[in-house]
Image 1 (cartoon, rainbow, N blue to C red):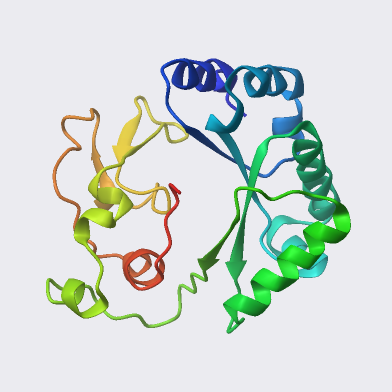
Image 2: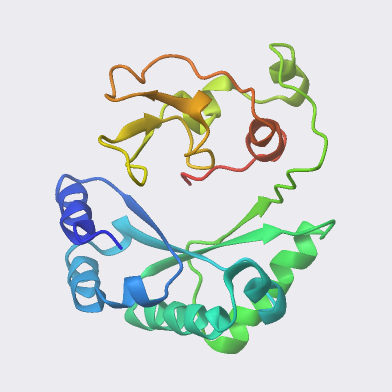
Length: 215
């Protein structure tokens, strides 16, 4: 969607960084097939494409992404695999789905389709807005065995320009781009302070769910 995507990727890769691209593998990505292949040949495994496939069944994936999205996503996945990209898949644990069973179903799907998911499958916890979750306190870290520094918002920020806004804003989390309490200012220096984990997603997704958008 961003016309500067390829220059941004090239700039990061040429500086020696590993780059993870989050994509749905559909039309916006396919517009850059030639450019992406050039980057792949120049930088190899330091470029990973992580494709969102919300479920291993067409029906539930399309319930989230819309009719017709399954075939387009699978076709994009097959193209990435056939070109030799490092490919990962991001799915979701919907309802009370067992993680081992879900991973097995994804693996069978890709094996049957001839798709190599060499960079693995990430299964994110569900985010039911209506579900009750515990608040995160200072004592929680020791109880759940998680370090505050492991949270993505401890070291990462996202810059967004909201529709109708005059300027971009720096926010704490990719899951909460429109919640004003997580808008930290107009510059990275303004946004360098602590982030209070006072949204249900903080507990549901990150602290208790063990998920990370960055890896």
